[in-house]
Length: 276
Image (cartoon, rainbow, N blue to C red; front, side, top):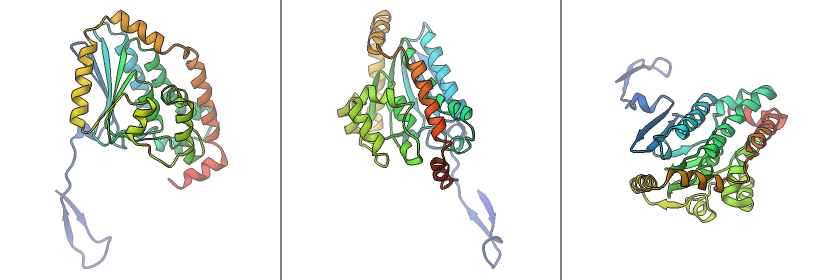
């Protein structure tokens, strides 16, 4: 129970009682967790701001993916986020607003680049579990999974153009799954969410389910089945699937510089003022 004095509002002065149901502390503090069981490493990230990811959380996520990939006990990885409404709302808007120089901008936009590259280099298959809407950098993360499963509520949007930049860093990963036409469509139509079925037809999602329960059951069953396969065969298959992306360390770094420069433009600074 929380007590709030009403003096600041209007007379007569009185005490009002408001019932507030606090969430479990686990669901109010940002985290990146990993749990390994029977060869399956489940990596889960969470942030109370719709699973948007600040730089420190992105760095931890990239490191956790790399460590799981190097762990001989791990045969397959499931990547998921906490909560049930949003998979990932992209980068931290608070950090974006506070960028005031090119170097800080490059570091900021390199966060998702590092996660995507960690997923690309990981020798284990990564199964994406996308339970809800995903925006901006979150679309890039979903695109960097090797097999992506979602609910029908998992609409996608590339909103970067709305604030005067563009999906430069995540673009290569999104284009790899959606093709240039699909990526261009959602990048230009930056105000629109595209439904999960559209994303499935374009190749981002491999399967779409009506409920979260059905998604979780399918993800777990699929991961367990992959554990029965030859790890060396899966490792070599992943190399083949990601062939042609060997230059992404340099490419995504260059893209981060572009975004870091654009975020300092007068247009973007004026646009961001509306969100302060």
